[in-house]
Structures are given as C-alpha cells and as structure tokens.
Length: 226
Image 1 (cartoon, helix red, strand yellow):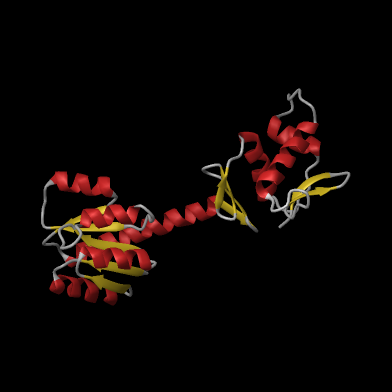
Image 2: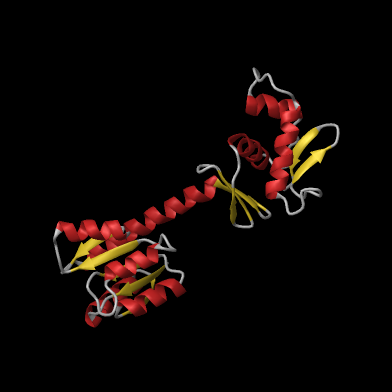
C-alpha cells in the first residue's frame, strides 16, 4: 500500500512516515500544497494524509482538486477542532479527520480502517464489472462501455447484453431471450430480439457488419464470444 503524507511540519511528517513504514506501507512526503498536489496527481496512491493549513495551497484546495479526478481515500489533519471545519472538509471530499495533537496509534487505526473500506469497495465494484475485449458493463449502475467510453443503452438493450455477457459462450434462442427479458406474456413480434441485437452491435462492436463478440449461431440464436 502506498501512502502520501502532505504537511508543512517536517518533524511531524518524519514521525508519521517512520511509523507507517514500520507498518509495512510505502510512504512519500511533501511539505506544501503545490508539491503535494503534483505528487498526488503523478503517483498511484492508496491513501493520502493531508494537512488543512499549508503554504501555497491549502489542504482544502488540494483535496478539492484531487477529487476532480480521483476517489483515493483522504485523511485531513488539522490543529482546529471546530466542527464547521470538519463539515467543510467533508464537503470538499475528505473521508476522515484527525485533530492535532493526535496519538499516532489513532492515526494508524484510521489508516487501516480507510484502506480496508476502500479495498472492500473495490472488490464489490470488480464483482459488478464484467469486461470482455473492449466491451464492459457495470451491472450495478447499469452502464455500458466501449473501449472505456460510456455508451448509452436502453433498458432492454442492457438486459440483453448483461444476460449474454454473464453467460459467455451460451447460445440463447430468440424465444429464450424473449421469454427471459420481455416475459412470457409479451405480445410483440419475435423480431424484436433481432432489432435489439442489431442496435447493440451498432453501439458496441468495432464493425457491426462483422461482429467479434455479439455473435449469431445460425439457425439457433445469439451468444457472446468470450
């Protein structure tokens, strides 16, 4: 796990670095807001410890600018105990707050808790994300992506691609797809399935005329090639 510590109190930074490295973390440090922001944007950190009051850029400004592109967990350090400062910090994107002076054991406990929460969240997100080739779907958010770019799908289109991608290689007849997704009481034409598959190919395949993933097994039905 890689941690960035940003604070203008050099002795405090050295103490935090020493204790966290003893816990097995890799630690980088910065002593003002500008340097901290540069490191945060350049490095792939698992957690950032950020002082509230610093030269060049305040901790709040750094936190806000990190949040423009990253959800990395952030612990704010502050000499103030005012609840309003904490509320503002949370509004800017901080995940936790530690008031100076603090017990290093408390800080380490909060670091462990945030990293554990972040790891569990990432595991859940991984379970909800299915990626095959350039096509990916987020089953929880019901979003689809082609080469990392969001693609707008209708509800039925998403239902079709989700079923196929969750069961790659399994062939579904038009009747199967119609019954599973539209329901047995659907009164429409079976060609509805063909229309939705055609639209999915146009939106998700590199060349819809020669699909690589949303495949047809002639005389049987459709499947997703893994």
